[in-house]
Length: 434
Image (cartoon, rainbow, N blue to C red; front, top):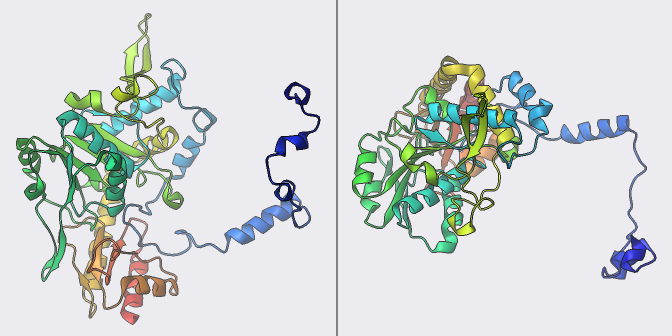
């Protein structure tokens, strides 16, 4: 190979690298055996604290729900864990079937007609939903509820930034009786493509969305409903039942580890009349020429399949392995299991709100009803208080002041079926001591 390219030594390949940087001397310790390296890495890892070590009350889009052990075993099967994303319909019937089953579960969960086989995460799903609505309505303006997760709103801005899209966000204010939000319909005009709301919202509030879909559609726009913690759908109406034209959700709560913020799986579904603008992959069921059941990729409207300007998305893959985890979780839990997760998460949040709201100087400002999350005003700066609670070995909430001016003293707390009453009592005691 060296002779073919006209050089004599491998070192000549690096001639363009400055000489003093080509082959630096590395000051490395002696090599370790596998046993020694394992002990060393274990010691390093033990310096970290995880949600398995301390009680966790952090939410804001990532939730510490229990993951049945079978989910990890199913995801770890070699046929799933090592398979490559199928680009052609005939590549892998097994993977295509798992995608089809995932889509069916998402349709049931979100209450809509058709789903894709996942996008990157809940935030990118909202961004894709906005682009989809713009294509369908041939309008550009986007109205976002101020109670949509701020990180989701940032992702939407990134998605549409190059197009100079007009984005309007409803205002959040703190009144004497709690949080209040400007009506999103007041921001909708004849140029609006869609209205994006979150249910439950970023502050945990379960909003009354009755009539919103019709009002938005009368103005020529579409309603997008995002769900940050889809375990809530064990108790609450689905986005489809609220009249959503497009629904999105973060799949993390459904059997996926927190994983330092990802990767996760974005759920996305819509009404059947909009299916040709649904981005990503869609797996379909069919019969082969011998009448046997089979699966194919259908409506492949990605940039790798058709001309770029006609593609519905530049998403090049789906989180198939993580979507398999979501499918395993939903299949194992079933409707009753999901309902029990939701019931326990809600009940523990209600218990915590009652106790915390009774502390002098503390106030729950999320309007009722809420699901498993609420905003707590405190007598202190929330960032300082969060750091102080680390000394009590508590992972306690998310300060929201950076995204919502005037709420520097507010801490967003979340509760799941994994939080015990004793842990909640510890949190109450620690907050009371500060």
